[in-house]
Length: 170
Image (cartoon, rainbow, N blue to C red; front, side, top):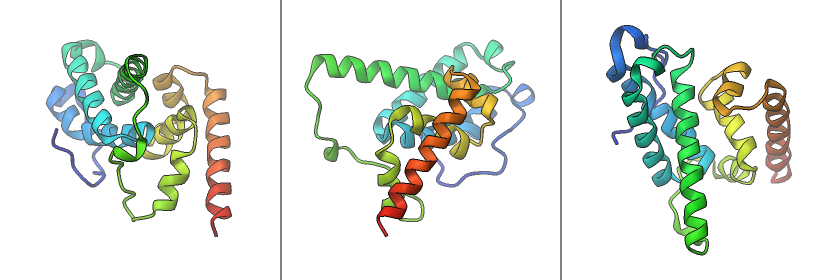
């Protein structure tokens, strides 16, 4: 998968007019980076995005009419990765996490990346949707299939934990 390295300002390209190809170009990298943060594994995130995008393509006539197709792709990718991870856990003992490459923080800040990695996945997923994907509370709730109140509480608790962790390292 070709992955761009910078956020582009045109992430909300009009998908109805330009079709799936334009949607893919505008959102694949963004969803990939959000999944890397959430899953903490770039290889798994790449596979999950490829799977979710192929499912979006197969259902493009329906997905293109959704209010937030990128949120749908993120949720499908996260579901796929979660299912994959559960299957792997059942079949083999957990691997040493240090052996897996992680995405480096854009500014080189390992402390922020490490603090985010310590959060539970549900909090990382909400922070990823709200901060990296720039989804609204309602869009995040829809994408993650949770209530808006749950989004708000996970975001609040996750950010508080990040602040505490980053301030305690000083």
